[in-house]
Image (cartoon, rainbow, N blue to C red):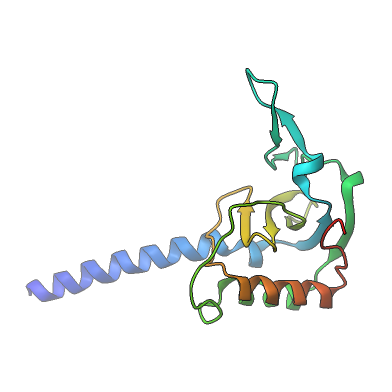
Length: 170
């Protein structure tokens, strides 16, 4: 009987954990529209003053009234993705078989953004990607995948196949 309750306890808590993870990742499934945007290094043009200082820093991405707080004049490309393309991005991001070890660089010079919209064309989340620095940031809660150079290389090839041509200021 003791073992039955122990097994029941483990099952309940392990299922709960899995359900929470799925809910966080569901933006890939729940979004009515997904786009990829490319732009020049955001740390150059999306800056704000630092309180009580003369210095500046890259501003945080935020959703304000269903829109991102960036000036769209800086967006060089916007490509609407099909459901199949969204699934391909998800498969790369969350594959546990691509990375032999996780790696992240100390820089953050983002140039790509995956934007998720609801049925009213309002932004519900965005995933900003710095392919060269092997980093991802999200506006809302997101279950971050393991990252590595091989995964970023696969994403870059995939983005190119979708028609994204902008990758740096060179």
